[in-house]
Amino acid sequence: MRGKTVIITGANSGLGRAAAAELLRMQARVIMGCRDRARAERAAREIRAEVGERADDAGELVVRELDLASLRSVRAFCHRVLQEESRLDVLINNAGIFQCPYMKTEDGFEMQFGVNHLGHFLLTNLLLGLLKNSAPSRIVVVSSKLYKYGEINFEDLNSEISYNKSFCYSRSKLANILFARELARRLEGTGVTVNSLHPGIVRTNLGRHVNIPLLAKPLFNLVSWAFFKTPLEGAQTSIYLASSPDVEGVSGKYFGDCKEEELLPKAMDDLVARKLWDISEVMVGLLK
Image (tube, rainbow, N blue to C red; front, side, top):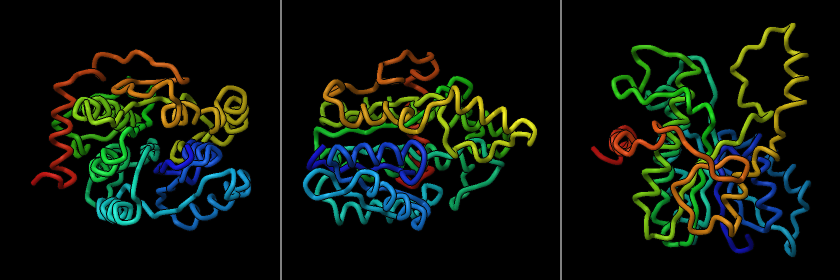
């Protein structure tokens, strides 16, 4: 990955941190887009110490502030990237929020849909020009197997009528896949590929909003240690889609464990994908 620039959202912990470290090892210039600058700087110092960032055999790590719950922050981040970066080879849409209580983003969107889908939708669209100019380039979208339990309800995308935190997470992850498929269709022939993935069940802080009874915590910790993937194991498919020559030119597909997987019909509904795209464009202000 020498000479290549990679942006990873949510790169200060979990899957994103693991991917940042591995791509740094592969000599990429890695831009960590993170909400909490202090935590991101601390993570960057730790990653540099782990990898041993030296001019001759490692890449470069850069921290930039990016709050996907704020369209203003997304625009400011992209403005700075477009000013400072001459190329962008890989965009990894990794950041996510999982089953949080009902709350809204700065712009009034339900938090999970706003961060997991809409924030990344705007980010990707604002960086498309740079990705096209850097082609062949790649967009990697981190979804989840839990997309299977989601539905795109156009009558209540913002969960104003009813809110179920599990369902809304699943809906945001289904939206990720539909977005990736529609974007891949729009980018045919440009040299920019788009693929989505599920990382499996991983031990990360993504589940910080999930309440586990005190007495059950030791059992949960034991089970997660025994059966859940480590962040590095969970990040393998993101790293693979970002860097492997095996997927050069492959686009519009869904991967798990570094292999292509089948999707349910609802995740391949092109009419729903196009309608979601059109509505998302209006919601984030790309279209009035």
